[in-house]
Amino acid sequence: MIQLDISRIYGDLREYLSSRLSFLPDKPEETLDSTLRALWFAAAGHLKSAEMALFGELPALDSTETFRLNSLVQSRLGGTPLAHLTGRQHFMGMDMLAGPGALVPRKETELLGAAAVERANEVASKQGRAIVVDVCTGCGNIALAIANRVPNAVVFAADLSDDAVELGRRNAAHLGLERQVEFRVGNLLEPFAQTNFFGQVDILTCNPPYINSVKVGQMPDEIAGHEPKLAFDGGPFGVGILMRVLEDAPRFLRKGGWLGIEVGLGQGPLLVKRIEKAGWFEEVSPLADQNGDIRAIFAMRK
Ligand SMILES: C[S@@+](CC[C@H](N)C(=O)[O-])C[C@H]1O[C@@H](n2cnc3c(N)ncnc32)[C@H](O)[C@@H]1O
Image (tube, rainbow, N blue to C red; front, side):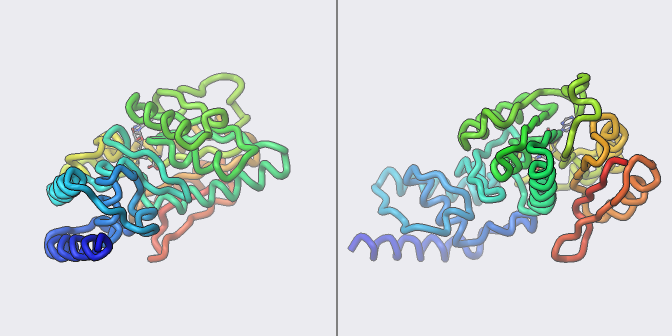
């Protein structure tokens, strides 16, 4: 009887949402079913990302929870990001805390994250440990993914935004990684401008803001109206912050250490040339997504 009710209410809501809900291309994990299931679980007090909500039986909802589900559905239709309603976003196997204080991690960033994990693992198995720095860390997704997958990594993470760092620290505690990842607040690499970091870093990662300022104003409301502008705005040409990271990185990386950056659509070829021309790096390796677009670049410090 209860199962019948669940299927009926689910079916009705699914039909209602099917003509009203739209999805952003950079959140491919959000579908009609993953969205509705995540909201359903949230209404019942089980907070899950869209990816994790695909698993498990939906619980029966009492009248208060049904009311909550309806208001979550309306908020989602009003443009509030799903991850803000559930408080969760999945990244590289971790169900992380999400909220308005930092960018909701995107699936596309797993390209950079997975390549950084691979290199950190190689370094850690050769040297016994790997020193990792992640700047523009946001909610800490890349830093925490490396810590989670590379037990011998000693990870430092920083962001200019106090709110992002606060969420990053909460995520570290949520994932039980707070002893392995230290968060700092500050501008790019400035929080690490200390002799014990100069020439010592094995892996330096950065997913910076890289949208040009004009385009930031034209982004869908689900992004522009709900996520921090600081997470997107890369200045008039989009690559201003990336250029500063490229300039600062050589001072921090040890010889043989890796720089890994995420780049915006279309920025890859220019940035590969820029890195090659700068003269500090070798093995400049562009990483392409499934469409063949360069979305991350790794380069080894000479
Ligand atoms: C595109 S988001 C990336 C967040 C996260 N690393 C991820 O992959 O989802 C860029 C981040 O850079 C931060 N940021 C912007 N300007 C910065 C600066 N000058 N120094 C440090 N962090 C900065 C923003 O607060 C935001 O958290």
